[in-house]
Structures are given as C-alpha cells and as structure tokens.
Image (cartoon, rainbow, N blue to C red; front, side):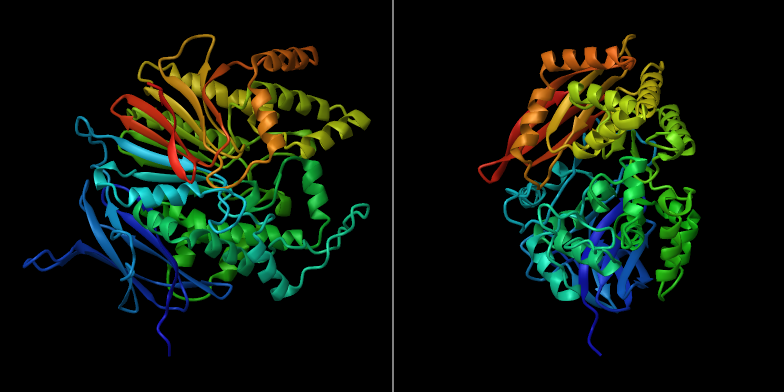
Length: 568
C-alpha cells in the first residue's frame, strides 16, 4: 500500500496564546501528526515541545484533518513538522523557504511590550497565480519578500476577505479539466437565451470540482508557505458561490429554477466549511460546535453530516437560517469581528437586510464585549465595504427605494441592480444605518478603542476613507478596502470608480437620492488614500493605541509602497 501524500497545506489557522490549529488535505486516510519543537543546533539535540495527532476524515472521497495543539507557551515561536502515519512530509526537503513556525500571541490580557507592533495583512479577490492576464499575484509576491525578513517583522495574522475561489469564472486550465470530466456544451449564441435546464457550462457544481479550485488557488509554493507560517482567517463572498449571490429575491428565484443550482449551493457550503470555516474556530469553539464535534470525533466518511449542514445553511433551501458563519478573533488587545454579509441576508416578503436580527445582535453584543474588555482597536471584517465611493453609495440606496415601487419601474430598477452589482451595505439601507449607529455608539464611549477599522474587499480597487459623524467620536473610524490580490479590473470599472469618488458627482447623486425621498446617511466620509486599481496587499499596524494603514501595490512586477495613512 502506497504511503499517503500531503495534497494541500499545511495551513496554520486559529492561533492564540497557548493553542493553535493546523489543517491539511491528504491523498488517503491516515493519522496526521504535528510536532512543535526546538531544532538541533550544533551539539545541542532537538526536542519536541508539543505533539498532537488527529485522524483524517473523509468528504466525497477527499481526506482532511484539523490538528489541535494545546499547551503551547505564550509569546513564543517554534518550527513545526507534519507527519502522515509517522512519515515526515513537511517541511519539504527541497523548499526554498524557511521552516514554517507557530508563533503564539502574548498571554491573554497582557499589555504588549513597549515598542512592539501587531501587524495584520489582508485582501480579497485572488485568482490562481498561474492564470494569465491578471498581473502579478500580490499575495505570492508578498510571501517571497517576507521569506527574507526577520520574524519580528512578519505579520501576525492574514485575513482573506472573500473570493478565495471563483466558482463561476474558472481558469482556462480548469475549464479544460471540466470538459474532460463531464463535458461542457457550447454556450448559446448571442441572440439565443440560456435555458433554465441547461448545465452551467464551465462553472463548477459539485464538491470534487470545488476541491479542484482550492488546489489550483492554494498550491502556489509561496502562498502555501505563507499560509503555513502566518495564521489565516477567511470569509466567503459572492464568487465563492456565484456572482451577485443573494443580491435580491428576484435573483434567488431565477437561480432556484435552474436544476443544477441546489447541488451547486450545497457543494459551495460543504466545501467552504471544510476548506475555510473549520479553521476559523478556536479549540473551545470547535468543542462547542455540534457539526465540528461530529466531523472531528474520529475517522470515517463525514459527507452525510456536512450535507445536512449544507442543506440548512441558507434560507434559499429551507426557509430558515440555522448556521452562523460570522466569527470573532482576539489578538491581545485587538478585537476582530468577521461578519458574514452574504449567506444571512433577508430578502423575502419585501424585507431587505444584510443580516438577520439574531446575527446583528451577535455583532452588537460582541463589539460591546470587546470594548468592555478594554480593546485598543476594534476591527470589523466585512467582505463588502460599508463606505463605498459616495456617489455609488447614494445610487445604491436610491436603487433600493426604486425597487420597492413595483410595476415596470421596479422591474427596471431590479434589472439595473443586477446589471451593475448594487448589492453593498448602502443597498440594504436599514442595515447600513444600523451598522453606522453601532460604530457611533462604540466609538463614543468613554472607554472607546483608539480606532474602529472596517476591513473590506470586493470592489477591485483599494482605498482608505475617514468617517465623520455629526458628533465627533473618541475613536477614529475608517473604511479600509483592499481588492484585488490577483485579478485584473476592466477599464470601464476603473473609470466608474474613479468618477464615483469625484465630489461633484457625489453632490449630484446625493441631491438625486434626497429628491427621491431617501434620507441622508448619518455619517459622511472622505477619501484619504486611493483609488488604487493594481493588485495590492494592505497592512494594518497596531502599536499600543496607535494605528497605521499601508497599501502596497504591484508595479513593474514587484510590490511597492502606494499609501501610508496614520489613523490614530
């Protein structure tokens, strides 16, 4: 019997002061061991500090493991190895990159040593590194540069804010693979509409096809090393499922008529849980999550367990939302709330909300808890920006009002909404206002954090915008958007976003929306950096009560500084 191989990973996922989780995909069922230790140095022998072992679980013929490490010392950094059935497979002996390390956070509640900094990098929208026409992959370029840095200069966290894979816009290589796997019919002619019963062409449908996308996107050697070294947290956006996912009830109804959609949506949730969501959870959260307990309790095929979860994960299928994809992370005195802005939308019966009531209360309660605990900075992760270019924000709220009219005007407004992707927070105006009020309440407390930063992606340009409220807040509030990591924006999109930042256009659209009866937002904002349309990576550096944002863009095939914004 052949020895099992490491197919994908390791990915270093949730890490705190004393625990860490390591995710892998393997080629066959096996036992996965992770050893954290001190390597041999001259005449001093190496030793294992912490060892953990977990069996793989199987999903649709693919094999995975999440190894939970406990008993680590706070604020330490040690290399680790991965073994399958006691055969070492990581680090790879011929790797050009340094050994991957697990770096724990300072002890919970401890104040960081003076002069130390917490660095977090983030971005969204990343197509496979080898796909032509997308420019230089900013994340891969960052990883290659980081390999030469001393560990103290490396980021402590990586956030991927959506579109990790493109289920509806596959690479040429994947399109050829799909054609050999199941056959892909010729697309309809220009004047021939697609029929509801036609398969989705060169889009993915089932779990195996989703797994192929993750292999293609995460197998780049530099990105693979980065994700094995820097703890990574993730959330999905529309292309992880399909463009415009849950933009409106009309869109949902149209997709439900397609016979392949139910399997597509179930496979999207199932693969998202395995490849992304599972690693977002802490060991304590894993132990309290019934699905995680059922999947990780031992070897075996867990496809049925996860299909049951996928079938109730979206009210598009069952009419009831019973899952939570949002989560929280604590990085010392920095709190992160990652908010699901896609799967939990309320769209039926004339209601429109970005989150359901229970989810919004969860966000509000956790934001308050972070501030009660004395956090210096509050980060809100949302794949979709809260503050867009002002002109687009006004138009989105105006469009939402027009869609409520019914008749031909409402149908025309719905067509415009789907044609130009009017689907962000401002297109769910009640939700936009509720989030704005939450930020104002938190930022106006006597014990407010120094900064509240909304970190987002999606819109294929990077920028920093400062929010201002009628009553000045104690916290500095900014929208920080970084997109794409690796995806070329069409020229018409660049032009539209450039114009949308112009003040004269913002004034016109604001007048237009107010004339239509849309109340002005309870916040104003102005751009302090951007728009940057190149592939980019953004760093948030937090040092005590100070915060700084740095955008680095790809120019001439390498990363270079674009903007540096002190925010508090």
